[in-house]
Image (spheres, rainbow, N blue to C red):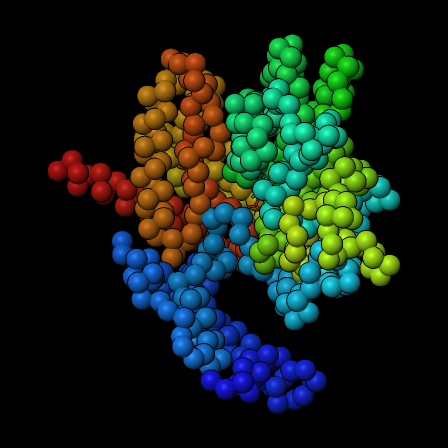
Length: 549
Ligand SMILES: *Cc1c(COP(=O)(O)O)cnc(C)c1O
C-alpha cells in the first residue's frame, strides 16, 4: 500500500468533488445495504445469526489485522456483514429501552465525527462544547432548574450520572476528601428497585456495598417513604452519615416513580433535627426524565388532543415527574427515550458551582484549559477527552422540539394502555404486575390457571408458591427469547420484591416485559403482538405435555 492510497482514506483537505463523491458513495452503500435487510414483520435485520459455543473462540483464532488495507468498498461490505441479524426497532421490537436512533441523532453524531469534536476544551472542540452549553440550558429549562445557576455535562450513561452524583455528594460534605480520602461511616440510600448503577458506584468510591441501604418499595414500585425515613434515622443514630439518596424517577423495569418532593421533605426534616450537612439527592431520571417534556403541557386544554385515557395517564406521570427539579442532580439518557445513538447522556446539577469542588488546579492540567484563549474547560469530569455527544442531543432537541417528544412519549403510553387491555382479555392466566404505574413499559406474569397477582403482591403467598410461578415464567422467557425474531419481548428476574407468608426475606418477581420504544409500534400492531404471547404459551404447554408423556 503506497502513501497516496493512505491519504485517500481520509475526507478531503480541500472539499474537492471526487473525494466527496467517494465518501458519499460509501455512506450511501452502507445505508442501502442495511435498508435491504429491513422487514417490518421481524425485529431483526435479516435472520439472527446462529452462534454455537465456539463462535467467539473461532473469531479470536481467525481474525488478523490485514497486512495491507482491504479497500473501503470491502470495508463497507464487512460492516454490512456485521449488521446482519442485529435487532432492529420495527413495530415488533418491544424489549428494553434501546431506541432506533433518529435521523437527527445520527446526523448529529456524524457531525461530531466529521469534526472530531472533543468536549474537553472549546479550543479543540468548539462544536461539541457550544452544543454542550446549549443542551445544558435547554434541558435545565425543560426540567425546571434555574438555568442561571445549573450546570452539567454529557457523560458515560445513566451509570456515569449516578457515579458523578455520588462524587459530588461526598465532596460537598467532605471538601478535603479528594486529598485525604473518605471517612468510613458514609451511607447511601436507594429503592430496592433502583438500577444497579449505585451499587457499582459505592464499590468504586470505596464507600463499600455494605453501606448501601436499600429501601423497600410499595405496590406502585416507588420507594416506601416511611421505610426511607426509618432507615435514615437508624443510620444516623448509630453514628453513620447519610451522603447520597438516589430517587429513581422511572424505574428501568416497571416505571415506578419515586416521590422526589417527599424525599426532599424528609431529608430537610432530618438535617434540621440532627444538624446534618445537606444530603445530596440524585433523581435517577435516566430513563423516565423525558416525561418532563409534559411539565408545562396544558392538560386542561390538551392542545395535542390526546385521548382521555392517555391524557389522564400522562397527568398521573407528571404529578411525580414535575418535582425532579427539587433534586440536586438528574440525568437524561438520550440513548433511551431521547432516541439518540449511543452514548448520549446528559448529567445536570442544580447548583453548578459545586463543580468547583472537583475541578483540577491549573498545575494539574498542563496542556489544556486556563489559557488566555479558550474559556470552556471541563476539568471536573472523570473523563479527559469526551465524545461530543451533545451535538447529536442538540440535533434531536431541534428536530423533535417539545411537541415531537410529547407525541412520541404519549404514543408509548397509548400503546401500553391498549396492550394491557388486549393481553388480559385474551389470556386470563396473565396478570399485569405493574398495573399501578404507566409509561412505556408493561410487565406481565403468567400463572398456572388464573391470574393471581393480587394474592402475591399482598404478601399472602409462600416463597415456594412464588418460586414455582417464577420457574413457569422463566420457561416462558426462554420461548419468547427463542422466538424473538418475530416479536422481541424483554423479561426481568427482579421486576420487584414482594413479602411472603413464610419467610422474612422478600422474594423477587419474574415477569415478561413489553417495552414500547419504536416509533412504529402503534395500536394496530398489538393484536399480532398479543398473539405472539399466546402462541408462546401454547408452545410451553406442548413442551410440558411431552415431558409428562
Ligand atoms: C438505564 C438506566 C441506568 C444506566 O444507564 P446507562 O446509560 O446504561 O449507563 C441507570 N438508571 C436508570 C434508572 C436506568 O434506566
